[in-house]
Image 1 (cartoon, rainbow, N blue to C red):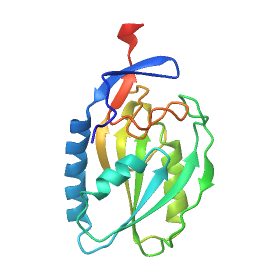
Image 2 (cartoon, rainbow, N blue to C red):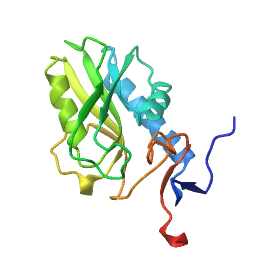
Image 3 (cartoon, rainbow, N blue to C red):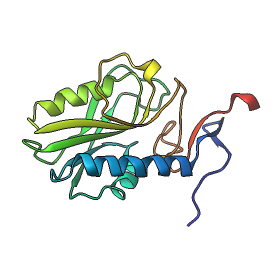
Image 4 (cartoon, rainbow, N blue to C red):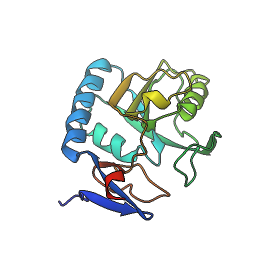
Length: 187
């Protein structure tokens, strides 16, 4: 199968270049899958993917998790079609599963300001899970403004706009198999 992984891509009139390769991403996700399998042995966790961005990360992660588990999804919005957060979180799809006394793992594509994850953690805690953990593909630590406990991080990155591997720019670029940043050298 050929993956969509050009060296440079134009999305919405802007050029982007590779920041993390498909191989780097897969290697780290495999490590996280093994760690989660060990940490949740005997617990049957439920992974809650935050749509739309986390679906690719969650799908790949599930291939490396070797304990019985479940998957559900929810959808929030704080960006719309912009590159920066609006500062407001909206619920667009609720969790279908009952989370009471369950071991819940929230799966996010990226945590930057932490606003959405803070909102989500508070919301899930009200459902009385047995435990609650957060895993993110990317964390922009220098951009984080809200106190959020992140239990598992694939990659810490600088405060750059990123695209690909589920992350979009005005709904485009999610299907890229790598993670890209703006190509400022070619402007």
